[in-house]
Length: 494
Ligand code: UDP
Image (cartoon, rainbow, N blue to C red; front, side):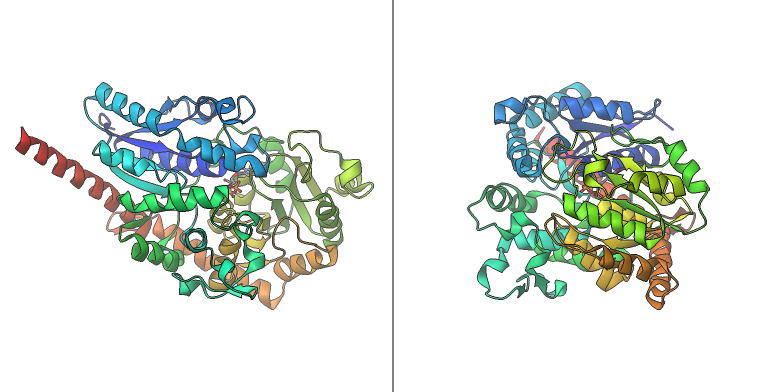
């Protein structure tokens, strides 16, 4: 490839679920375009990112100074994975104070390179970066690692808090009728309890979401063909271009998991999966931040055992325990569970973190019991894997709504972190999806269709560009045309 030109600055919020799609996007741009990519983050996240990059990568990593203890957080806390859920808002609030350092960083970069970056791509939590970009005359876009439909519901909920104005448990979103009715059980605790004066409401309503209109557009890690309705919401709402460029995923081969250590090696996992028949395995994981309660864990173990299916389950200490503490199988799982599943070779318990993309790409895996974070969703859909949904937070409830009601590739098992769940219901849902039922058959058919849509969207062949490839080209054209316009104006002034 010729000398790389221009600089694209990427700035994710400090959480694995945010950093992962940004890293995937950085690698994707590096591979498909002739641009230099600079990933910005706080020092500890940069350290983890450094170890995730392939050795010959041209991606620049740039530190932005941050001291967590200045914000009442424990020392050296720079990622939500080191925080209990109720403290995540503190890190979110602290991140707003990065504004002056971010501006300085872009100014320094401009001085160093003799040119401002071609564009800044910032996180959905970093609406404030748009005004920095405006001040410095740099093209700016939000990059959403969340899907269009889910983020549209999330945006509308935070801006309007509609559940506050109705007596019933069912309500509608005032500016997003296409979402049809929402039930209060589909609200994350933070939204349910929000009244406009709480820290999350203040962050979203005052500091973050209104800033998005200052941006030049939004890139989504999604596909136009199956997420059109949500994308339309933002086109209407912001009056800005929306570019669905996904899915960009971290490649299996690179093993770049944004610095997380697997609780099991990929080789061992694949070795285990190789011994299992085609489409016979259920994979169970609740993403990078979540875990379930002790009683839910017990029911899930009983359900998995009673289902008779092969499974891989990523386990973490239950809610209320330190996530990094030792996993006490004899307290949190049924007596003898681990020995039995090991003995029968039916199940694999992985502690803390599994090589998820490898697992989902394996032909033995047919179904994913997931909290439906958007990265997990995309990783499953790209492989035609069916989903049993158990949304827990943020926009995950609406991802399930899209997957179940529109795409037909998911059934919802449970909602929220405090729901009661019975092992009988777990078995019923697993059988419905994984057995040769009419529903299971129909879901597999739809999952194949969605997988095809994804393949087509990412196709870049002579004479044919998929919708996501086109959207990426359009995005860079828009950034380049602003660059030309600015240069012209500068020449006129000069
Ligand atoms: N992940 C993983 N191993 C795990 C748990 C999660 O590799 O044991 C990865 C997963 O592949 C996905 C990301 O972490 O890319 C989780 O992002 P998602 O949007 O699904 O959920 P979040 O963590 O943001 O709730």
